[in-house]
Image (tube, rainbow, N blue to C red; front, side, top):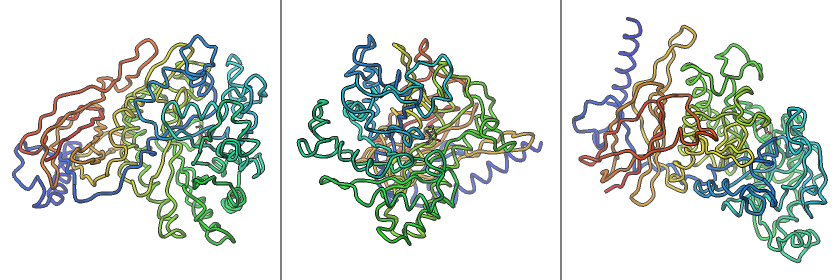
Length: 555
Ligand code: AHR
């Protein structure tokens, strides 16, 4: 009885909110022919800004199976490769138009000497990898002792092959500032101009790599040096005070907060603004990291004990992960507001360069890959929801990177030796390509909340959400239905235009645990379904646990 009453209240409230929302000029001003209680209205006259393609970026750390086995197989390998880089990965990545890739870390970055990764490959030193202590005894040697075969040249070549811009993270903890600008010199000085340019040319790269994006340390509040925000601001200033530009303005990305560490943001910006030199103007981006890891429903804050399982989970764990991911909007708003205290014009943008779910070990397809986890339909929904949040904040989020690209955490791809598969997350990135560079539009979603039980108490999660973008007369609308079992039918209308025709692509599965493996590569893929516009509007049923992309031609 209680549950029925609650459902009634929620449905009633949502309907009331919908009535207020849809004004007389909206396409819903007319009687609702289908009697739907869910509506989506795209407001053509409320543009939010251009969606930076760079929010669809990737992260490749030199961590366990990411580089060695995932990306780099070597030129003499039997595995099909292009200059040592896994060919199938290159081909798949081309489909998702990757705008930018971050390398070499992560925590690894603050232990890395870029000089180890240049020059003839057979002369490069082997070094103990930052992540060596976490490797299993039977892990390949390259995971523990970095052979440095994949260095700056190989990374730049990888980026070129897939059409992405490189984003290099510099070592602030264990190298002097000089090595930062020398690395820039190696990458960017014109052919024949410097000794480092000659070394680059001798390796087959006479033309500069023109790397624009430079991370100045990583997680400097933790593995990147355990600095205070004031100390880090001072280091940031020292590292960036003189760096040669070679006719290209460099974009320095400062190591921002972990999740809701507001003090880190406030401390850094206050110190920068009141410091002696360039103030916040030297900062292009402020890197925010948010992993959804604590699925304990408030029982613990312990980093190990709080994690959930990637594959074995209940509906309540599904919603818990989405709740953790849904915090992203509040993190963006909260840090943005604090940044604005010292940077009222908001010249500095947010760069969410590590995001995704993080589960406990145990679901690895390749057991010797540290931090590898199986991406399921749940992670696809999480990823679509996160990308929608970025789409809805184009003025604040300039760049993002999913952690990580392959064989690690929220992977788009899994690979081992000659085996390869695209995960459900990879398919989501392929669906969302259509948003890149579009004009984001405010979109109102009105749907009853999902009601479920959380440790004996009623809990709820939003019923439908997504994002919309426009290019010419073509609108892309992505919509997440997070309900584990119920489809949701909604009416879709455009305020200021009529829908002439529609195509729909849906990613879902009847099993919320569904995932792809090397043996069964296509369990979760995106499929085309019929969508028919009528009277300038569209009625569409969003399947349970799904992501839908609607491509609408407007008139
Ligand atoms: O992505 C794995 C690790 O998570 C990164 O190295 C670090 O930046 C973060 O803590």
